[in-house]
Amino acid sequence: MRRLIVIFVSILIALLALEFQAQTPPAQTQKPPQTQASPAQTQKPPQTQAPQTPPAQIQKPPQAPAPPAPPAQTPPPAPAPAPAAAAKPPAPDPLQLAEDWMVRWNNLSNYSLSFEGKEVGREELVNKMMELYAPDVIAEVPPHDDDQIGPVILRGSALVQKWVDKVSRTQVRLLYIQRRQTKKQFEGTKLVYATPLPWGGMGISFEIIAAWSRREDRRKFTGPGSVFLQYNAAGKIDRLRLYVAEIAQVTPL
Image (cartoon, rainbow, N blue to C red):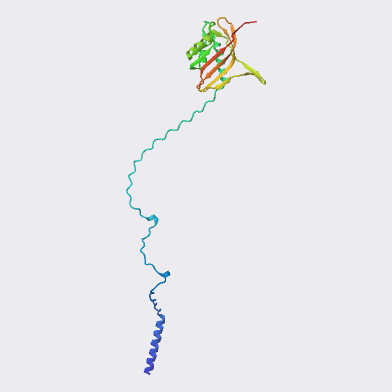
């Protein structure tokens, strides 16, 4: 009986031991170290690698401090914009220039006399004519002396003014007209020849028929002629040539 109890207890202890061993995970057995490794599985000895720093965090060697920046200078003031080029005036009309000269010349005798015999408005007409001339004008004009042969050369506006003043006092009924030409469908056309001058300005010429009377005896004269005018860049006449040829006295029939 005692033996059966011992056997029963032993069997019970063995069953408990087996149940406990089944619940405990088996311990991992370690493989024995391999003496040689295949060439493909040979492990290189561990190398000490320097810590890689990202490109943005690489530290540059210390540099010498930059010299201090010079004090800011005030920029020079911007140059003032150039004034716009003045518009070039249009070229004068040669026909108008010729007409203006003829009108002022014929007006030299359009003044009146007072009861006392004084000339009223003559000086104004002379000054109006002289407005066309430059101070250094050179004029070649017909002679005013019956004994003189050839033209008279006048230099400067002072001498030209004396000549114009003499014409206004000694000649009346001035009637200088431009010659006209008719051809095909053009009838009575005034021709004015114009050319630009190499030194600036414009030169014009035109044919005329001159007619005037003497103031002292009212004798009338006429003759064909030409007018040559040179205008400078300022629009003033700096050369004049008044040519009247074959002067003849007009007598009533």
